[in-house]
Image 1 (cartoon, rainbow, N blue to C red):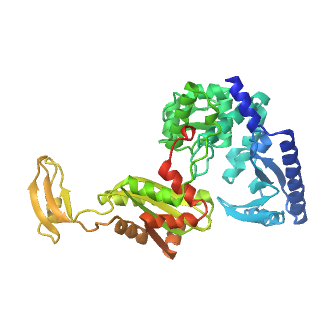
Image 2 (cartoon, rainbow, N blue to C red):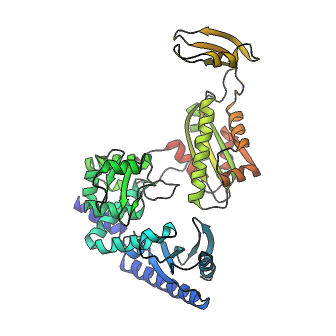
Length: 460
């Protein structure tokens, strides 16, 4: 194992040149932004946070978090003033919004997030969720040594290789801070892997021992596969973003890595990107029908957009299932210009006949009888089937899956504010081969290829 880890570290640990470059770049940014804030009369402290500050970043990572700490008494409007001041920095800029505005700057080979927050005395006094980030940095820096930083880098690289790295809603995986806490808990990458291979949904980790009874934690954070209590804020689950899919993938990867250790878990082969001819042959061979709903990408941050995309995905799948269609799979995608909801349906068309079964024999049947007896569209019934239930045979109202999809999309009920606005402007339902026309959109070919050939990364 040690030989394997050494080979991996050679590929993931930043070199002296990487560190020098990052230090010089961040120093220039700090100086430039501090000077601009001073020129505008804004009292604030500018600090580097995140993995760069904790020295747990991976070679090739170019994300830099620059936090602007305002006095706790500063008015809310000062957050906006900080963002406006940061626009003086060189590079391509894009304003983002979460709880409050922040700025994304690309330049010099780095992607920088300038995040205003308040310099509070403790997380209990925070005015926004990002106010706790400096406490996270200090907590980790005080407890990590050089050896543990190595273990954190191994865990982050492992998470990235198996497709579980990142707490963004688009990923639903493990954040960098969560990886650091897991290493502090187990004291090594391999120790964590050996422990995690036996994890079940509802796993609890409480580094500071805030909750002696883990069952209380499961009540506090119900339906979350992993609960890791934030050591600087006992009311927060650091692993709240981890989906059951990513949790299960991580547990499975730990088991298989211990059975057959390989660099493939850290550096998998890239997914296949197929040509249109190959994609169409795969689509036909499946014997199902693919539908792809496209619309303008709303101008909001990914962490705002993706929950709404997932919500719409569930709503469309539920509506199809309720009408008698089987949803074989679904996925969401978002590009700079268009976003898409992909659904795989079987069959795409249902017969005119629909059998409606009533309540079990022990339950009252009056309302069921009133609903169908003598009504237009009732073809046969009532009669009692072999299970002892009342049955009517009626005319199916919507026989085409495309009709069902369009009905939900036109109503736009419960699909989220920004998504609803985008759908109101217009949408298109692409079907079958017509979906291949979307391959001219950035990264859509990769998305469709991944959907049709999906496979755990270390098996590629």
